[in-house]
Image 1 (cartoon, rainbow, N blue to C red):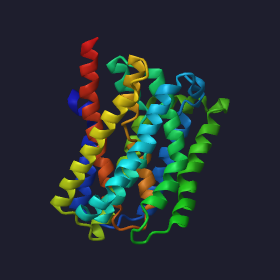
Image 2 (image 1 turned 90 degrees about the horizontal axis):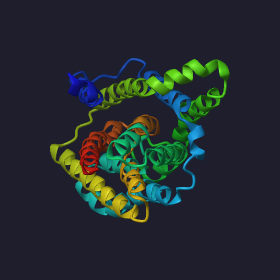
Image 3 (image 1 turned 90 degrees about the vertical axis):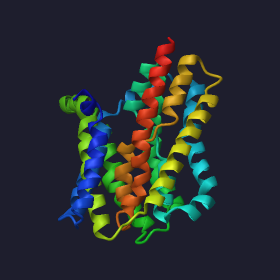
Image 4 (image 1 turned 120 degrees about the vertical axis):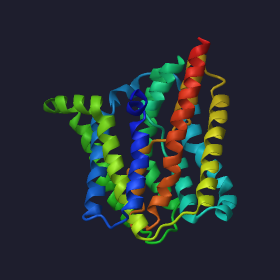
Length: 313
């Protein structure tokens, strides 16, 4: 029971995909459901994001540079460098999914939690994961529309307008509402239960996305999924090695923050962004698949590493 409570979201992802596979259909009002869940995710994200924390630990510039270079620069460059090979081995939608995955910012909750467990500098992880998320909200849609374009039904301009309405504006509204005294109870609720609310919304988006994609005839071969899993695993392994080396000039605690913050990718931001950016692409479920593989992988590997570092203290 404790294991299920701890990993219920991963089980929920498997259940959502399985339900969509068993009952492929055009979900009634699916676009409204998907967009409503996306708005909720970013509104809650804006309400719960501790923007006041951004000024803290500002002097720790070495880990900040290492984290953002690894997560936001090195990761996309690795995938783009491997793209000629990936184009020969993988379904084009999976390749686009790998590109979007590499562009995504870091998580917040798991970065801070894993860093704290390992005995690292949790404030550094918090501040830089927040900065990464803020950058991701603005930069990921633009870069993804440019670098991962080419699918059926692609409409980069329309996707950007739609993303501003369903992602960026709700996030900005949430940040603004944090300063309204009457919203204090709602802000506290989002800070304490925001992760749960977002996870439920993400599962809702996944059910709609996969059900409609399977209904449209999406089929991925076992070989495609196997190669994509290997590619995701290699990417994560390379990022771990690069982040560890990038943190050599930092203190021991800061280096752990670099390791766990520079290698994580946010499903909370990635799933709704993909659903919006590629909403007219029948292969949108394939595009989100690399992220769904990376998410449990980073949690399992991160937990094992955190426990190992903790045992050394």
